[in-house]
Image (cartoon, rainbow over all chains, first blue to last red; front, side, top):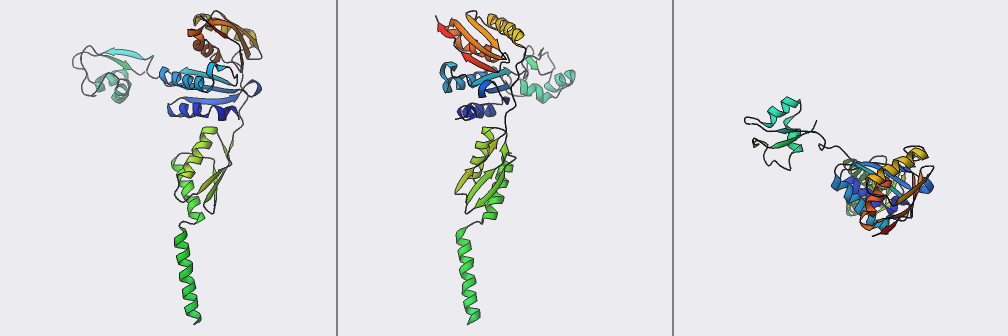
Length: 124
Length: 160
C-alpha cells in the first residue's frame, strides 16, 4: 500500500476542512505533505487523524508540515464607538463591511447590531 | 406480409431499447457531466454495458476516489473500473542545508520545550533520538515535521 493510500483519509480531511496542501516525495518514498490550515483546530484535526492512522508516528513514511494561515487572526482590532456601523468602519479601512462581518461572526449575531466598546477583528 | 413482419420487428427493437434504459453513449455523457459538476478534471470516461472505465492522470488519491464516487452516483452505472493514475510527486527539498537545518531544529525544539530530543540530519533526513515528557511527545514530533525536513527516523521515546 502506498503512503497516499495509507493516509488518504488524512488528505480527504484536509480537503474538507479547508487546508491547502502540496505533495512531494521525500527520502525513500516518504510522503511529504506541505500545507496551510485555516485554523489551529483544523491543524489539530489533521494531527489527530495522523495519530489515529500511525500511533506514535513510528512508521516514518509521512512528514506532515502544516502551518496555520493568517485568516484574520493577525489583523488589527477596532473598538466600536457610538454612531459606528460596519459599513462606516469598512470605509475607514478601505474594505467591504461584509469582510468585517465574516471575520466577526463569532461575536456578532446581526450585521446591523454593533455596540460601543465591542472589539472587532479587522481583516487587513 | 413483409411490411407486417418489419413492423413487428421494429416494435420489438423499440421495446427492447426502452427496457434497457440509457445507452452507453448517454451514460458516458451523464458521467462526464457529473464529473464536471463535481469539479473533477483530467478524467477520460468510457462506458460499455453500463460499466464505466476511468482513465487519466489526477493530482492525488483524493481526486481518484472522488472521481470514482461521482461515476458510481450516476443512475444506470452498474460498476466503475478505476484506472486513474496519480501524478508523480516532485522530489521534496529540505528547507536548508544540513547544518542550518540542525540549528533550526534545535532552536524550534528548545522553544517547544523538547530539550531531551536529539536530532541528527543527513541530506534533509532527520534521525531523532532521546526522551521527552510523554505529554510533550506529539508537540515535539510536530515541531520536527514542520522544520522542512524530507525524511524522518523516529526513535524518540516518551518519558515522564
